[in-house]
Structures are given as C-alpha cells and as structure tokens.
Image 1 (cartoon, rainbow, N blue to C red):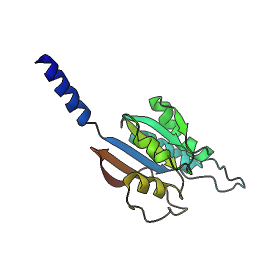
Image 2: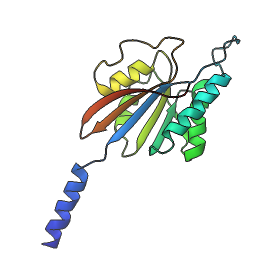
Image 3: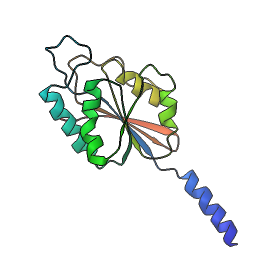
Length: 162
C-alpha cells in the first residue's frame, strides 16, 4: 500500500510540472555617436538595465541568455550580478536555441535580443505569430512574457523603465 502511494505521488508531482516563464527583452538604449556595430549602452540604456533588474529580481530567474554584444550583455548584467546567475551566450541564428530553452528542467528564463530578433524569439516560443514584425529602432522597454504551463502557452506584453 505504501509503495502504491509513493508511486502515485511521484506521478502526480511529475504531471503537475511548475509553469515556466520566458522573459524576452530587447537590449537597452545604445550609444548613437559611434562607428562600431558592437555599441555600448547609453546612460538611458544603463538605467533601463537597472529597471529590468528591479522588475525581475524576484521572479525566480534560473537562466539568463544574451547575444554576444556589449549592449545585450550590459542589459542583463545588473540582474545577473543581483541574483548570481551567469549570463550564457546564445547565437540568434541557431535554430535549435528555442528547443534548448524549452527543454530546461525548471526555473524561469530571461533572453535579451535585438530589434530584429525579439519578434522571432517570442513567436517561435509561442508557435504562433504574436509580434507582427521587427521592433522599431526607437522601440525600447518592452517586456514580452511567455508562460508555459502544462504544455499551453500564454503571452503578455508589458513595459519596464522610463
């Protein structure tokens, strides 16, 4: 009898998998007076990175992903430092990346991308087109929230920072 209860309890725990939330953002505002493509954050971008830290520091983030650019890494670094989760670099052209993050065991995920990759990330996570096109060059501060619970996905678009 005890064994049956243990087996049943295990099955119930596995089937009641905790929801996973994917937070997808574009990097903060970048410096505009530079000739390099690997641009640092402006003061406004640094403030936005701090705002991102404040809004997500208590959200059980277990994985942080960034492209390998100064502006994307700098956007997530304050949160990384605050919650002691290392930033992992991903390649936005890697077609297996979405599968990789969907197969993570547990914990919420933050992904920072670019104006021309955020829509693809969100749409591929959801399996439907929720964001029609690339973000505008001047568009900053959107927090795209994709929640997965029991194989079903939901989407919400929020704002952060000024």
